[in-house]
Image 1: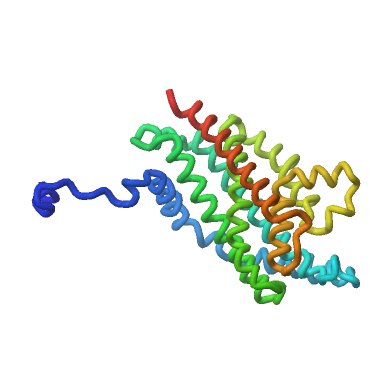
Image 2: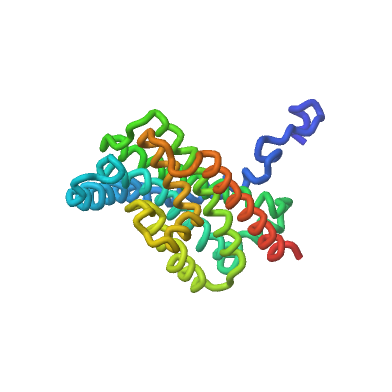
Length: 270
């Protein structure tokens, strides 16, 4: 009554969250993360530093001629940024999604509210992209301090990692919503994440792989993200066309979204 009196008898206008319900799910993720961010803040800067020192400087000391005309440190850093986006996207789209269905059942509580399936999925994906972006920005900052960014196009790398994160997270959402045990998530890391990280051009050019493995690398979305990030950071032309890379990653994101929405609807809509 007091609110109606203050507004002249009219109902107050809904805020942005009211107009975009998915923001309520994003807000839930941010509020939860506010209580835990300190645990990962240190590693967000320490891991990039140790990785660049161990691989870029340590291993790079044995690569006298560099790779593709650049030092090994400069070669590896853009790949590590893309790989970080992959790791964070998969980590935030696997156990948290399975847990929200099977253990803490948060999704079912959300589905009991006016939120729709698309709102629940979209809000959670938005939070995953937030995590991907913040983690990648930390890596990018460390890379800049090491002087490994050689082109103004490095400014678009945050946008690229968002696209990488979207192309990875939506299929993983669909997969995580389809399984009932975390044993299947271990298989995902063993047979998809680790091979992609090792053989998608992060640590060495895929041209050095046998032909069969080379084409498997081309199929993975990570290689396309690595090639784009490396081109932007070094100011060189990518191995494939930029529109081709972007369309391929977008296709993964759209297909993953459609699959994830179907799996979410099957489990949440009675």
